[in-house]
Length: 208
Image 1 (tube, rainbow, N blue to C red):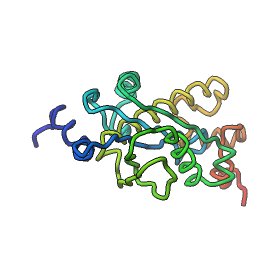
Image 2 (cartoon, rainbow, N blue to C red):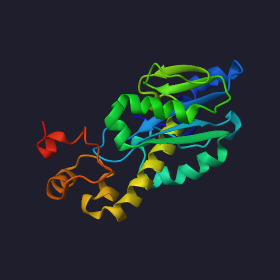
Image 3 (cartoon, one colour):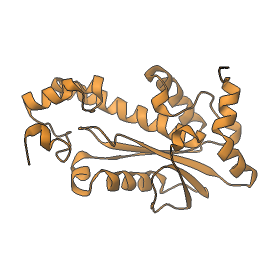
Image 4 (cartoon, rainbow, N blue to C red):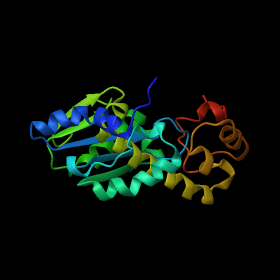
């Protein structure tokens, strides 16, 4: 099977955007990272990059190495005409649930966008400043959503690495708050810290 070239990949990932740009639209993408972890915030990003400033190499952040994401991150921020992130913290996630927390973060990071179409990875029912189009697996289909996924992922990972210095017993620099065996064992041994989502760890703590 022939390997996709960088040019072919860029054409594939911008197919939706190119159709919208041809109609004169200004387009952004929104994605989130951190819906599943036991600890830390959910982080969303809204990113809009002009057609003549696209950064090659963008993809769904899960398909990229940490080194590649870190290399892309400053390039995307430099190229973007709009790039905002939003954190929703564990106590708020516990209060309103992770889906509503994700929606709130998405709405907040997009609130100042002045364009007219926002492509969103899967989530529907958002109150955004312009038209929203939800795409299932959008981070693998849309350049803008892929760019947002990279910005959100790097932002959250950097924060969790910082928190590792404050709470070294949980291994946050390695697991980023996800439920690895090491992390679960640490919760059982040391109990939760303020970064833990109590609504996610009840069974680990033996709570009903």
